Length: 243
Image (cartoon, rainbow, N blue to C red; front, top):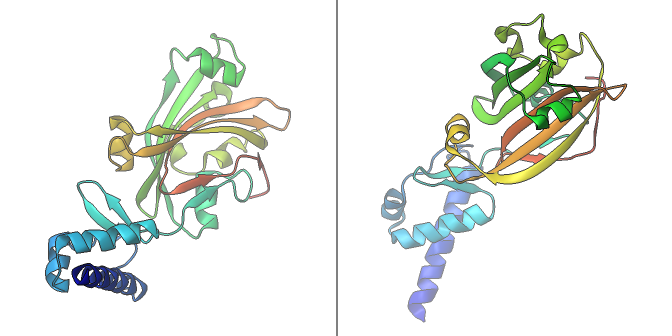
């Protein structure tokens, strides 16, 4: 019985000390902690004690564990998509005081759009559809991968390089964006998206299907995006305000 009390006290001590170091800025946001072996040696305890302390801090959303990579200090709060109405990624990042960056993976005419895409955009198979694939970064951290489908009339004057900024701002040079309908579902990340978002295969992911409309209810774009579940939450009733 006495041994269990000692172990409990030691586990609490290790947990409290790591948490205090985070508060004091010794371990900073997104920093990887020393290994369990090194922490056990420093605190003069077993690796099991360290593991229990880390698990407790994970439950408190102070640490996050990345399989095969170690334990990290939890980054800032999740980004809430839709908290200020219908915003693009660039606008949302600015609202949070963050720096956004866009990597354009591809931009090309989509030869055989699926029935799903045609129905979402309310067009026939003869309509020219373009696919835009981008990876979005927040303070250099990969956050989302977008696969966006638009009619030729909205993108015919743009090149791949033009899409490194706000897509909404480009579109609004031609048409007013009014609102968006979203469907959000939880999936498990597959290899292609895993490498782009730097999360392990099989991790939870948010897949979002969005149709964005003009003021006259004409569909402008159809977006299938993949968001890191550890960094995003969603609000689904979205209108377009002035940004």
